[in-house]
Image (cartoon, rainbow, N blue to C red; front, side, top):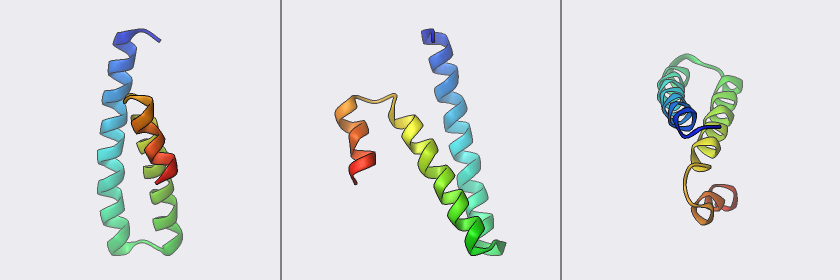
Length: 65
């Protein structure tokens, strides 16, 4: 993956995270418990993907904490 593709990918992940957080707020108001679990799982996976762009010792904190 080129540096340009990495930047685009990081931007796309940040946009995805923003949309997921907005969806989480709506789900909190009108969703089911299953929906909340699923959006939380998606947010977790997006956070892990974003963490891969930071130094490895910090990225490990996501898995350990």
